[in-house]
Image 1 (tube, rainbow, N blue to C red):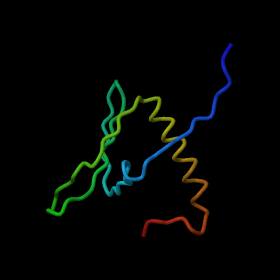
Image 2: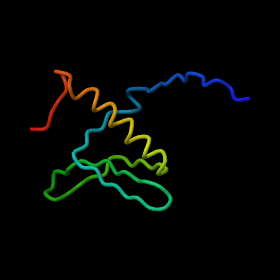
Image 3: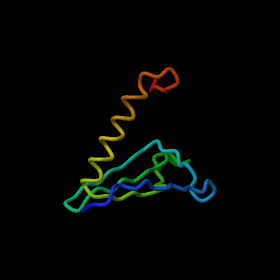
Length: 85
């Protein structure tokens, strides 16, 4: 018999986990999974700096895309949401 799903407490220390801005995302997919490189444009022209890398299974990536799409759809009609110019 399976246990009912328990709520998890999530803790993120703001000083240990800064929010990183991205203006470029690079993705690589192979038979093992997905790697996403979160990047920022450098001060030198034509330079991109990878600020963090995230790896996940293809199954997890599909769940991520589905959830992100749902959140974006919900927030796109809000007056406080931002749009690309």
